[in-house]
Image (cartoon, rainbow, N blue to C red; front, side, top):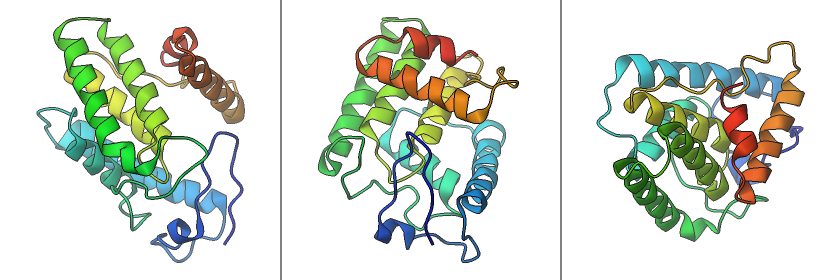
Length: 195
């Protein structure tokens, strides 16, 4: 089984691919469809069934990833063990996440930025750390959304209002906004999250 990866998607190595649970998946389209169904169930759990005291713990980060991909990947909810084309060294992931979570708690408690900007910055740093082998962008978007909801704000739209625009164009805008944020400029990302 060989998958074609769109721009900005981190390729999986052989061991990670061997962790695919459903045996019938042979194409990227089938994988995308299966993962989407798995994520939809996680969204229901996250926003309708479960009540969470806070999303700002490492355990919650792992639990949400597991819920999003538990029917797809054996390693769902486990931090990656290999280097990727994006992200920090795998052995640094727990410390980087702890620092990120501490920063976000401090930013909220001290109103350093508006909550929407805190969620946007949180999303960006979570993607940049890239804790998992797959699904980091989707996971980080859902983490930002739950942070907003827990702070009595609506979820981001993540380009959903641009229905007339192709998925690839929306993805390009998202990747461009993340790259701009890598340079410390969150302007494009703050616009994109509400498009």
